[in-house]
Image 1: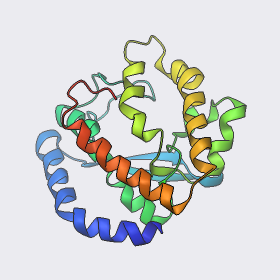
Image 2: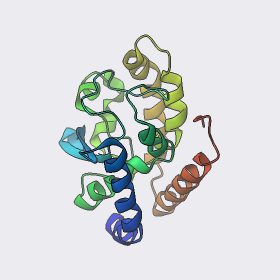
Image 3: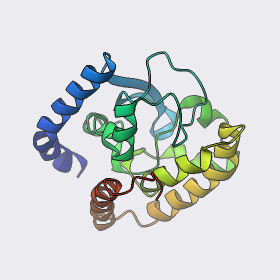
Length: 198
C-alpha cells in the first residue's frame, strides 16, 4: 500500500519539493537536506532525510522545543507546516519507513528509553502517526525545560508509546488512510496556527 500511495504523491509534490529545496538553499545555503541516523524496524538503523531546518553545525539537546534558537527562520515555517518531513517519502519508498507508524527515533535517545517502552522499535517507523500529529504540542512542552531530554524520556515517551500502541492495535488500511487525511488537515491548520500549539 505504501508504494501505491507514495509514487503518485512524489509525482504530484515534485514541484513543491523543488521549490522548498530552492528556498532552503537561497536562505540557508547548502546542504539542503539534513541526514540523520534513526532506528527502524527490529532496531536496525537507517538514514532519515529531511529538509534542513537548523543552522549548520548546531549542537544541543537531541530534542527540539518550539522556540529552539538553532532553528532558522525558514526552518521554523517548514516545521510548523511539517514540510521539512516531505523528503521522508523517499524513506517510505525505500522501505525504511511506512506511511503511518511510530515516530522514528535517534539512536542515542532510543538507547535511553525505559525498558517497558522499547517494544516500539520492533515496528517500522512512520512518516506520520498519532504522535507526529501532536508534534507542535510536544515541542511546546519542551520549551524552557532545564533538561529537555529527561522530560522527553520520562514524560513524553510514555505518552507517545501509549498512542502508538493504540494505533498499532487497529492499524487497518482504513485507519492508515484516515491518518494520512488527518495529517493533511494538520498541515493546513498550521497556516492559521501562529502560536505553534495544537
